[in-house]
Image (tube, rainbow, N blue to C red; front, top):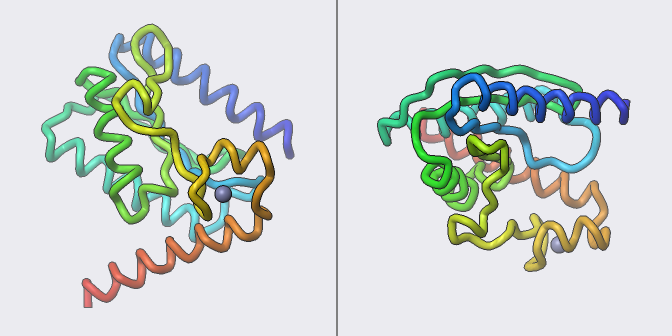
Length: 173
Ligand SMILES: [Zn+2]
């Protein structure tokens, strides 16, 4: 299973490079920011679909042309690709704002590859690195130091998701 996940990640990377080469425009990739191996359950797929739709909506409101888009599910979970007709810095800014401000933003991982096939970092657009789901350290720090048990993090993630859909469904009614 681990090797299938690694292969899926490698294929994602290659796919992004191929899209950059084909379009000469930045490539946005959306995945879920979830630790562990199990990324293909119904709730997570539903959450991914919601994140994808919300982010696409933001791009459309900002009149960003989406030249290509594709969604699929691999061993590493659901993923989406978008080739956008806007500068990589601008789309990364939109992406980080979404990650920071949207209720589901923390669960989204939105990467932007520029036309030199390099990922734009959060710092390049004036933001800090991501914070941990559970404490004030950076996510990287807690991952490296194994500060929290994976179940704790997953519990937090599922509570963010259920809160989001509860509020959303209440609004619909
Ligand atoms: Zn932490």
